[in-house]
Image (cartoon, rainbow, N blue to C red; front, side, top):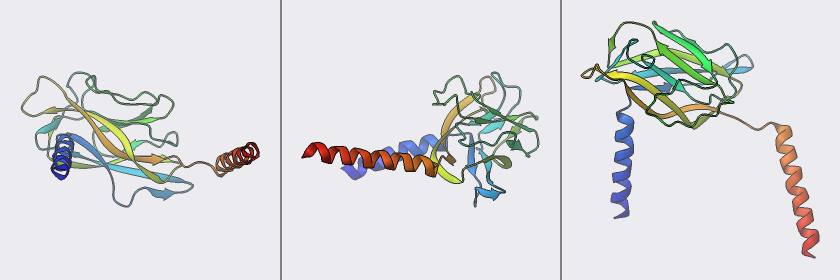
Length: 192
């Protein structure tokens, strides 16, 4: 019975992700070393029943990758035709989505500026640099596009995406370790 419950829940979760229209995915072999930083390159998958449209209400088609830790200023780029890129502390978020966004960490926002383009498509060319190269699979993205059958309203959603993982500095780890040793000594002293 427990197995069937797990299978049912997994089916619901993956069915929700399958409905995502613009899905950013970290390119294979990423991130790559770029000098003293790491280059994170993404591609997007546009589903067959969706279209990119710069004219839909509330900002046209776009996607936002939230809380891109360690962002190196000025490195966000969109080399795909008809896309722009910017880094914002409060990223574009669809009105129907509740996304956790730390206003002190940069978000990557990629906006479509071309004519109506229908899926299915895979589009390469979205990138940014971070001082971190370790992957955190618990990142979040949101998107806005439009269903090809419904041109009156935007289609909005969110999902998981790989982002940089902040790695504590050695000095911070030494301070934490020193504090734990101090607590252990105090505990031992008061236990006598």
